[in-house]
Length: 450
Image (cartoon, rainbow, N blue to C red; front, side, top):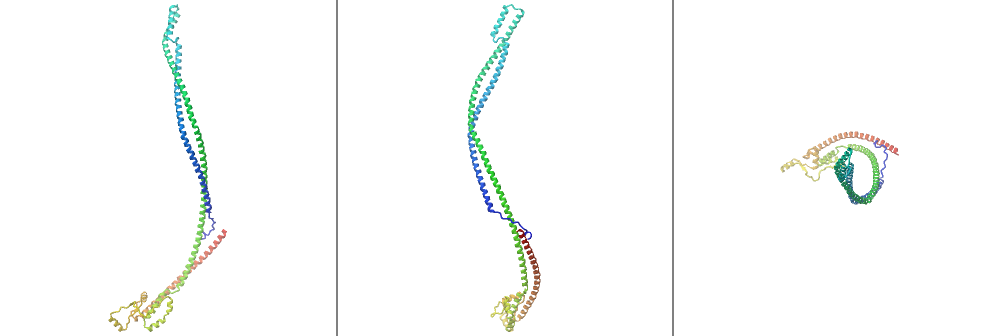
């Protein structure tokens, strides 16, 4: 009790209505932000759908532009092929021209007819003119050189034919290349036009992409607001339930204190009741424990005396305090005007009955209650009127024994109860001192709290 009586700091009960109101406001705010997020989401969906539509249209135009670009590439490749062929032919032309130049330098004349004419002229000179040895040798050498150049003339003409063929091919390729370039320029214009058609779509997609960025940023801000409010609501709930938990703990401690007080009061009442019960038991112990059985013995004796002759019954009944017995709740059994044969001694034959009457013996009739009392006292029932006094003496002897035993038990019980009562009184006194000390301690605690 002293531990529970320690000063406790009062914990106020948290305001549940204020908490629920604030929580409801936060939830409404969250719903508003979520509604905005949904709105931004719908706008994003619309923008994405428009982008997908633009993508489909752009894909068609892009395929057309790619087709035109592919054709341009094919034409460019054809042009490159022709240019490569022309470059090769130009190289051949350069080679052939160089070879012809080299052969021309070796040939004095480029035709067989001219060589034959020159040889004929030299031979005529040799025959018509007088030449010294040196001049003749030079003339012969010139004729031989001209004869040798015949083979070179054929080779020269072959190369010349090749050169003309190369020039013809080059001219043809040049025309074809010019046509290809014209076609390439036209195809490039077509391709540029196709790609120019994509520019509005690209600009619109760029605009929509920027719009998506803005919408996502706005939705992110709303989401951050939702998370912030949820965090504040969680912190508010944690603080509220923590305060409520502290209040419950305080109330629980207060209930423990109250329960301890009630338990102490109950214990004190139980001790007082135990002491009271001991006193009542001691008062009851003053009574004779066998008083009821002794009264039954007196009642039975009174009944048995009624079975005796009249003068004897009147004398005996006068001696009994019938009023006192009736006050104790006992009924004195007297003989009825008309006997009821609850039980009687077994009679013999009629002849035997006449013999008994002759002997002066009367049949004794007893009530059922008296027989039960005799059985409970373990006394044989009298068979004849002459046996009644002995039965009365036996009942009085049992009563005397019960009186002696009852007094002994009463004295022992009284002694035991006095000891127990003294112990209970000591416990009660000690408990009263403890209660007084606890009361003073509680008053001091209340004074300190104030």
